Image (tube, rainbow, N blue to C red):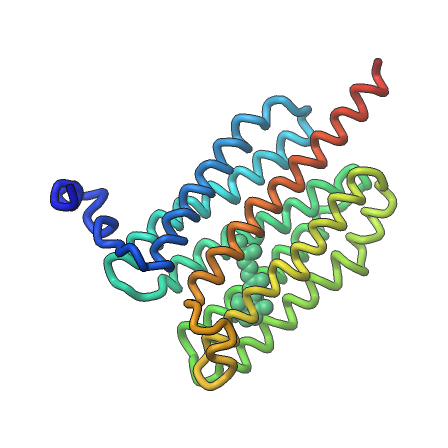
Length: 250
Ligand SMILES: *C/C=C(C)/C=C/C=C(C)/C=C/C1=C(C)CCCC1(C)C
């Protein structure tokens, strides 16, 4: 069976994933989970009105882009046996700005302006590009790039927790405010996994804080929680908003 699979180009490397390869396992499961989530979001988006449809579409795009990258990362890991840092960051630089777009889409009912969206997108791109420079290019100056990245991260946290985005969420109230708050927690706690992983992965810093668990496992679990969870919060808000208008209509 193994030899049969490896004769097919699609399975060439994957057939080599060993039983005790936890990194390979989480890449594989992560890929499937992202695909399943995408199917769920894409198939359910038409049961919502126009305003929410776009938000659910973006949720699906986030998990779909991740699924495609996980497909490649899983293969890279199986074939090369190293962390697919490059694919990881390409995935993030596409999906994290889309998560910023979700904040804007949700707050549009309260009059959110495009400038809020661009501000969050800009900060997220700064955060990820500088993070990549520190993790893959200028390893010796990892602290400097990590610091700049961290400042951009805090600026995002500040904007959504205390800044203009927070005021808009309060003005909207109801299920919008609830969803906004939950997404804020995702950014504060769920996203914090990544800088912690960055520090643990930088030689001489906090190596070993995860008890030898490979960083890729931590990132893979984080991605599943953040991308699928984020999308489900948006989906929940759409369901809540839709059923409350439906009962108001009747
Ligand atoms: C789906 C992927 C997500 C939500 C990725 C988020 C990534 C971050 C919040 C990364 C942040 C970083 C820092 C704040 C400093 C060190 C470098 C990074 C890029 C790991």
